[in-house]
Length: 126
Image (cartoon, rainbow, N blue to C red):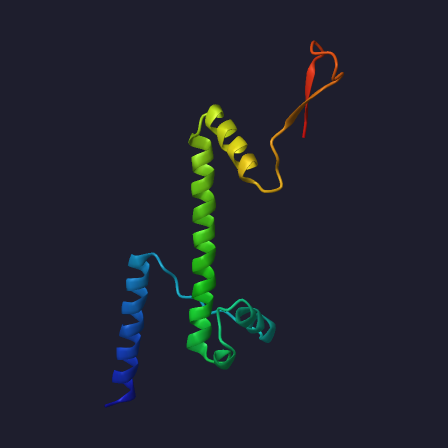
């Protein structure tokens, strides 16, 4: 087999993969990863120590980081959408519920300015 036939086949394969990625809405990019970035992938658990020089493992680790980032953004967007769709009364109820559930928070206590005077105005102590 000649090198021209091999080159045209690999060229056709690259074109096919490019078109498939374009249909799926994905892009193929080249990323330079230095030693400290590989260390960070290992420290965060995306890459094992043994695979820190394995290109396929690094690719998978970066895909994991991006996937987690997308998940976080989608979660934040969903929470934001939920907040926007709530009525003011729903927001107040949710906030009071969060305060009651929080271990550090305690329900407000009513104090009297003058304990002997029942007609004295009440105030809330946090």
